[in-house]
Length: 428
Image 1 (cartoon, rainbow, N blue to C red):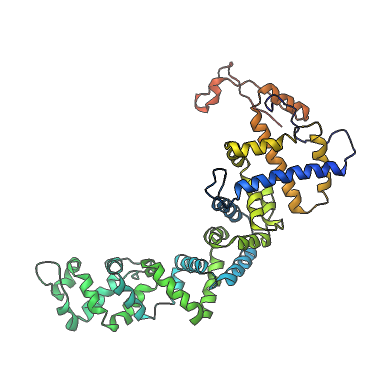
Image 2 (image 1 turned 90 degrees about the vertical axis):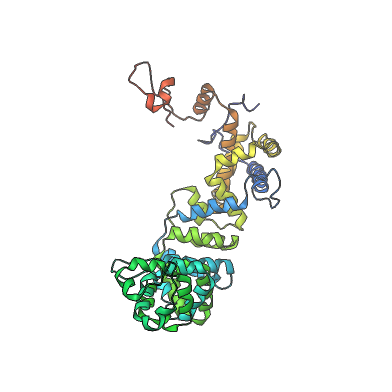
């Protein structure tokens, strides 16, 4: 029936009639509310095993966070919102706190590493726990642009030579014979035969090595944090209380240093729905699309409403395809669509549209998005021929131009200058 009915209004202009009845507007509003409720039950159902759940909340949260991260906000706004978010959740939300401290280690390794450099017992504990940490740190020779060692191999080598009189005889070698210091200093490749795990095991009892200038210099880059992020994050959690002022300063530097986009992508995923709702409500940005109005210009009553209408704003075709690919949902929607396919369709649309000028911003946005989704879905279902599409354009007074397209012109790579081939386009 819908395929044959091509009298679909695009609501490009109001009908000739000038009088609109309140009951017409209320009827339209109720129909739109019914569609909204069907979509909400389909998209936000808590019964994740139901076949007619077309989109999980996790997927919709990802869409929302990606959109929030793409907003253009001022530097002051970025700092204000994320500093507020961190202050309100740090220590009270374990998962969020862990993520923030992890990002500190990754984004500001040099500054974060300074908190640990003087605690030599901490590094003794680190290397006692895992032999792989020893290999990853003391087997590597790496220098920064100023020639300073960024890993532990150079500091270990220097300490062993300087303290050779009391420690060298205790070392073990993987080759056939021991290597004396005089040979090792000339042919340093022989140091690769050192039994590294045994050497560090000896030094774990020697606080002089862990307090040495050479070892501390190897820590200045903060690269050691990557040996075991979880280990250092646990200590940072303790510092939130014991070294509060230093941690507050470090968190402030983190917010200032990181881009708005990365802060959104790394931190908002660990926030609750109400937290994201509040964050969105207080973000001020420029508006160039309905998506941005949904995000930062509406007072949504709850997070689910924000998820629903943001999804309709950014993924109308996807949601329509998913709805109509499921027979149960399709039947429910079709039953409601029949209420729109009447002679009064335009009249009721414009009656409510005129009334919407006095409603709240979120009510206006809801009206636009649900009406747009219905119109898109109806047009998609019609599988319109060129003739039917032209009739719709004419009915809605939309100007267009038709030029025949040859089969060969479909592929740009195969395009030639043959006069028989003509390109086509439509203007609206």
